Image (tube, rainbow, N blue to C red; front, side, top):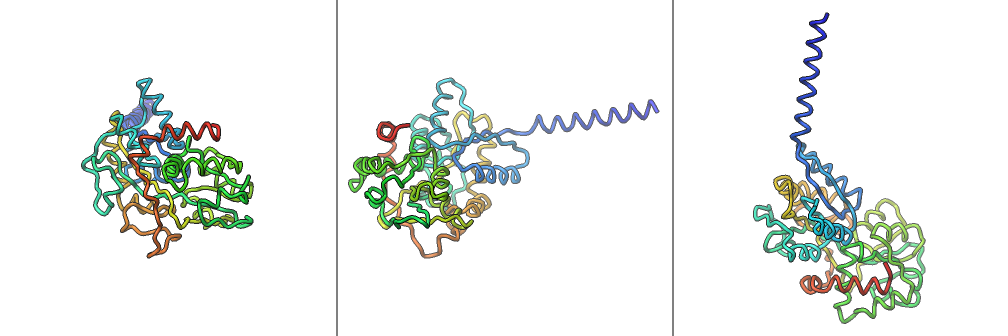
Length: 328
C-alpha cells in the first residue's frame, strides 16, 4: 500500500510539473485596443484559438485615453503594450514620429489597398470605420446633412463622443476644423445648441437608443449593429461625405514579445481575421472578404478627403481648444 501511495504521489508530482512547465512556457502578449469591449473579447478569443500557445493581456479604452496612458508610461520608462489596435492613422503617425513603432516588412498585405497602411510598414489599417449621424426613430427631425445639427431645431438634442477620449472623434474634430465649410464656427454652434460631449461612441449610442437624446454623432457599425438587433435608431451618411478611420494595428519598438505581436498583426490582416471583422459588422480592409449586410454591393460611401499629415500637426491643439469650449 505504501509503495502504491508513493507511486501515485510521484505520478501526481510529475503531472503538476508538466502543467507548470506548460504555463511557464506560454507566451504572453500585451494588447492595448480601442475596440468596443465585446469586439475586443471576440478578437482576442479568435486569436487565441488560432495561436493557443499565446496568452493575451488586454487594456481597453478610447484611443485618446490610450495615448495619454502610454505617454505616462513613456515618461516612467515602463511602456507595457507589445501591440496596438486603435482607431486611427493620426494616432499611429504621432507614435511613428516619436519613433515608437516597429516596422514589419513581412506583413501579408496582398489584397489590401496601399492607402490603408503606412508606406514604411509600421502600421496597417484593418478596416474602414466611418462616422455619421444617428437618430432615434421617434425624433422630430430627420437629419440629412452635418449642417443640420447646428440648427436651432436640434438644440439640446445632440450628443457626440469626446475627441479627448475617442480617436475617431478626434479625427472628425480636426478634419472639420480644417474644412472651410465647417471650421470652429460649426463647433461653436453645436456648443450654443447645448450639444453634450460624452466619453465615447458607446455612450452616444446608449443615449440615442434610449431616447435620452434624439440625435448623435456616431461610428457606422455601432448604429448598424444596434438597428439590426431591433434598437430604434437610423443612421445617415451625409451626402457631403463622412470622416473615416482605419483601426490600424502596429507593433511597438519596445515590445517584449515581438514574435507574438507579429502573429497578432498577421491574424488581424488574414482572411480569418478580416472575416471576423466582417461578422462584427465592420467593413474589412481586405475587399475580397466581402461587405457587411448594411452596405450592399454597388453602394459607395463618400469619404471626406481630410489631410492626415495636417491633422497630425494640429490634433493636440484642436483637442485643447475643444476642451476649452466643451469642458473635459
